[in-house]
Image 1: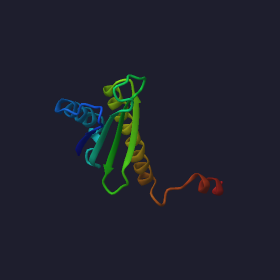
Image 2: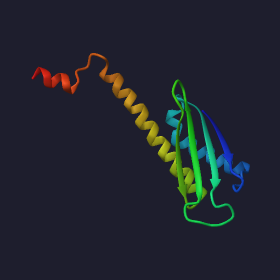
Image 3: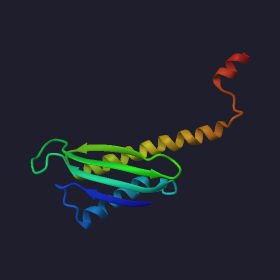
Length: 121
């Protein structure tokens, strides 16, 4: 899983920030490593030099194997909070996405559905 960090004009995109963001994303999404080819991180400060409530934005886009990309966005008071919030949202989205797939596989094409069970009753 490759992690690419992109920063906006008002975000200091130094190596330490990129390493911290990469580690946070890796920790949150590590168990999906085999299904994700790349995660793009987009960090921005929507108010620029002015301070404001929830003006830090983190957008995460996960490129999945054999699937369409998925993305989440988090706004927060600090950049760190935005990254952690977005990583948590993306992990939840992927849990849901891959959980539905596993449930469908377990049912299989011959598994009875609720409608079929009711018709036979």
